[in-house]
Amino acid sequence: MPLPTRINLGAFALIGAIVILIGGAFAWAAGWIGPRRISGGDVIEALEYNGGGQQPGYRRAHAKGLCFTGSFSANGDGSALSSARVFKPGRYPVVGRFSVAGGNPFASDGRNIFHSMALAIKTADGQEWRLAMDHTPIFPIADIASFVALQRASKPDPKTGKPSPAVMKPFLAAHPEVKAFQNYMAKAVLPGSFATATYYSINAFRFTDAQNVTRFVRWQFEPEATGPGLDKKHLDQLPRDHLFNEMIARTAKAPSRWHLRLVVANPQDVTDKATIAWTGPHRNLDAGTLTIDAVGPEETGACRDLNFDPTILPAGIAVSDDPLLAARSKAYSSSFTRRAGEGPRASAVGQHSNGGNAR
Ligand code: HEM
Image (cartoon, rainbow, N blue to C red; front, side, top):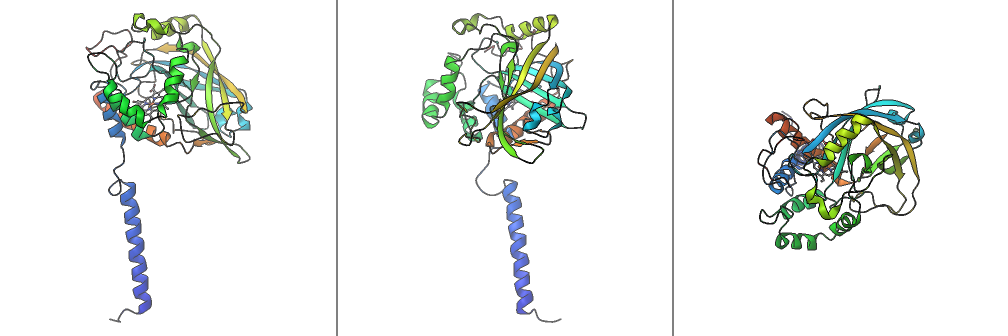
């Protein structure tokens, strides 16, 4: 057997180094080495801790919801920003869900908390766009570690029903970015109906047009219906299912409509922090109309078994550099896997509480 020459010794060393590098990269990606990363399961445990325990079979966030169906009619103008089929003139079927934030499906609607809308829009080319939006243009935190810390810090004290100031104060001192959201919630109108709320993407996305030009975009669904906001001083006097019952009654009479406004980032806009609003004039356009003409409980609607993961996007739209998007995808997937495995439950809207705290 010939002795190894200097050249093939060098080749062996190179191959060895490559194997170690690939192995290391794999171990890092799998989370076996390096600083411990926050998993989707960690996020779900923090949400359950905040909510005072599990509600098996329900979503771990936005647990209280109502399914709906309708359509999105694109007027063609959105094609100026994205080559996605959904922006070409046409009418596309929509399945969606209204919800209020929090892990308790029996919670009262009278809370100063997110009112939300999720959508799944399908086009004939087999592409799908899933959207999960809140009624605020910004989010309290910008990264997943802060989200977990917020869930832990804001757990309501059973005696007062509010977060303990002793826990919340140090959290807020370490997270000054939350202030912008607190200021917004203190001043903003809390929509009096799901039909009169504007729903925001909050996170930025990358839109690529047919000429391959990419721009950062945030979007919002603006309602045609108007109406007064909830009386924030007397939220505790609202019937438990006020918002959901109002939407059921409203839809029995007439459909509700929203316009999809696409807002293009200015060069100085921050795209990787959901805590920072894009202020001042922006290029924007109305890409079409969302019409919701039927609502129904989760057990008979098509929304219960859907995961409205905001990273499920059609060609022509991609995630941005906002780290919340990947974090949301992991958390929604963990929530979905758990609730599907537990056996889905009937809609809590209109049902008696199972003993959970109604806040
Ligand atoms: C790190 C930040 C976030 C985390 C960890 C998180 C976590 C979750 C989880 C676990 C669910 C339940 C998913 C399921 O079981 O299907 C959920 C639902 C939802 N989230 Fe988030 N979320 C985050 C940020 C946001 C933001 C920024 C928005 C709004 C733009 C949002 C809007 C919604 C909506 C509307 C739903 C309900 C979707 C449905 O009806 O199925 N979330 N979230």
